[in-house]
Image 1 (cartoon, rainbow, N blue to C red):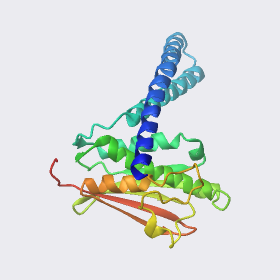
Image 2: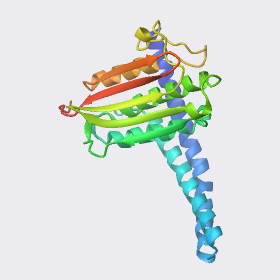
Image 3: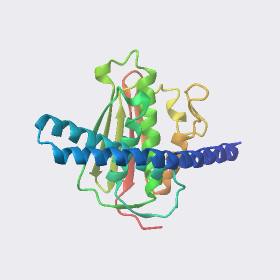
Image 4: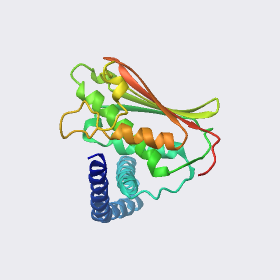
Length: 241
């Protein structure tokens, strides 16, 4: 049954990839037209207010294009090829994908990335999948407790830094936390506290396996009612496999 669920998930991702590619084509053409019209108007007006609003339109068109591109790239089948990877870039891409979700609209994302982080030998889309899985769980945790979590406290803080011989990524949310009863089980396959149809219980299990395959560690600290912090540690010095 476990292999069957993995196959179903793989087929779902393939379907998402096909849909994303179609959406990228259908949305890309109108966006190109909008961008062209904006540029034409910019060249024909000197009005400061109009120029300001046109720049806003251009920035949003660029943002939509980037989101679609990131979604297409993420949903493509993994090459499983280890290559030197910019972890900050992948982390930023994951945040951009997750923050456009409906549940994330009222969540404030705070991102602090160290500029001193070197490229690491990883499978780029796999490490990005880890970040997306954890970020989605963080958004779900806040959304599930939105009644008791005030709007001022609906926050996700993402950090990357170097600690000793490791690259450390922390993802902290201000959701309802994980109970002591459930905490030891969260990396088990098919374990989930979400309602039927809202989660497969595979996200954290898959993430754990991916991080371990890169000789890294993934840990979690949580206090019920106060929030959760996931910490991913990746060795700075490892051989390309």
